[in-house]
Amino acid sequence: MGDVLIVDDDRMNLIILEKLVCAMGVEVATCSSGAQALEELQATAWRVVLLDMQMPEMDGPETARRIRALGEAISQPKIVALTAFVDESVQQTAHAAGMDAVMSKPLDRSALQRVLDTANL
Image 1: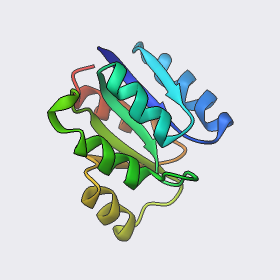
Image 2: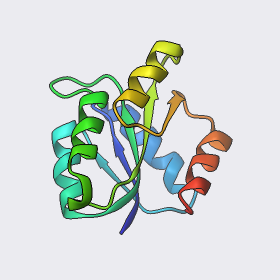
Image 3: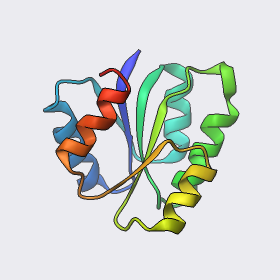
């Protein structure tokens, strides 16, 4: 079982997020699309998925709905939405899609640590 799967279509965001999470001492993998994330989650169980809200082809909410639709076929991870702007509508959209939390980018290290703590990482 892996610790954190980061899903973002922006390569620079992936690099920054990967360095931040790795520095926290947890195992990390990255995907650049929702489709790749679904494949990865079917191959490997991940405890936390950091999922960008706005991606082409399959956005974060659709990816989260598809992850949740897999049900017991996979070990269901904690899904954290990542977005540049958090307001009530973004939070409602994320929660309706099955996401557990919403965090704004750039990520606050202490807020990320709290999320990881809730996943026992």
